[in-house]
Length: 137
Image 1 (spheres, rainbow, N blue to C red):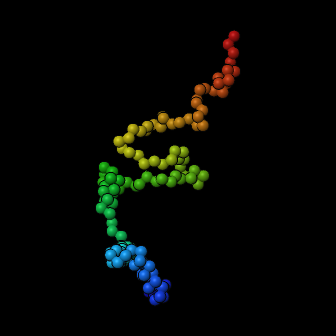
Image 2: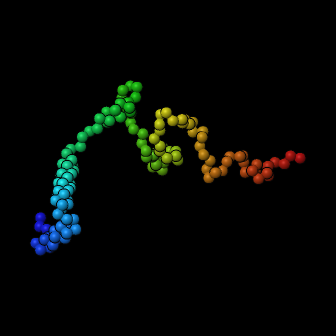
Image 3: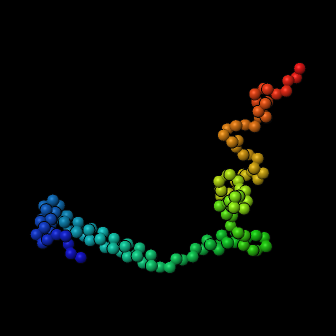
C-alpha cells in the first residue's frame, strides 16, 4: 500500500519530529508506534478469524431445556409474548404487558391488585356519586 507522502514530505516530517522530540525520545516513539500497529493488525486478524468460525452452542441451552420440562419429562412450549387477535378468531388477552416473572417475587395470581383505569375508583353507581339516588322521605 503506497504512502500518501512523497519522499521529500516524509523526510520533512521526520526532521520536524527529530527537532521536537530530540534524538533520545525518537527511537522510543518509533518502537511504541510499531508496537501499536502490530497489536492493531493482530486484533483485526483475530476478529476476522472469529467471524469465520461457526457459532458454538452454549452450555446454557440444555439447562434451559431442562427448566422448561414438565413433571412428565416432555418439553413445555415457551410462553408466547404475542397474543392472538380476537378479531381473527384468537383468544382475548390481558392488557398488561408481558413480563418475565421471578419465582421468588410476590405475585397476585387472581389479578386482584389491578390499578384502576385513569385513576378512577369504583365507588358505586353514577347516581350514588352525584347524590341523586332514590330519595327517602
